[in-house]
Amino acid sequence: GDLLANSAAATNTYLHSRSAVSNDPRVRGYRLGQVRSHANGAFWVPVRPDLDTPLSRIDSSTVRDVVLLKGPYSVRHGPGLAYVDIQLNETPRYMDGFGWSGRSAMTYDTNGKQFYGHQQFQGGSSDYGYRLGYGHRGGSDYDTGAGNPVDANYNVRDWEFAYGFDLGPDRRMEFGYL
Image (cartoon, rainbow, N blue to C red; front, side):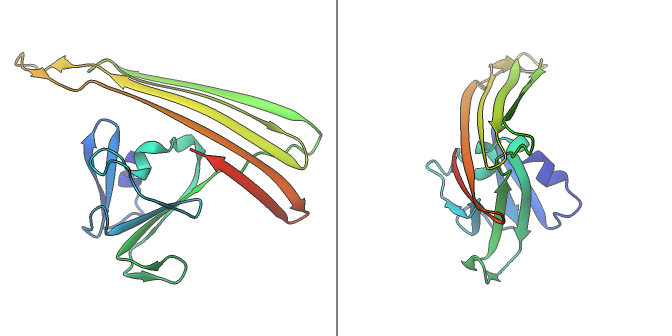
């Protein structure tokens, strides 16, 4: 979400940070319910509108592209005031036969003891591929410089699974779970 807010291409777009883990995109001033969100073609409706947005539930390392459509209508997405269309990475293919790889990432911020760890494995062959990822984010309560306590404790986990196989030389089928 922070990358989208800092992008030079995202004019008339800003993020409303509801918490340390929730960024609500505001396109042309429109709010949740007025901005339609899609992830890999699936319409995204938050379970908890006060805490849940598409940008806060998808790990940025799995995002291939984010397209902002400022509306008010789209031929592909139908009627709406604005759109956030998130495209995730496709599953990998290895032309020399079976292959696999992994990625580990960790960030830590001393203010509030905030951390984020992510582990991902991917593999496949020339005609199929898979990806499995797990992320864990957390933070603690802290005191301001004036000694006032700030209730900022959070603990969020995310899972991602994707499996894809080729139907032909120029067609593929992808299944994903977030």
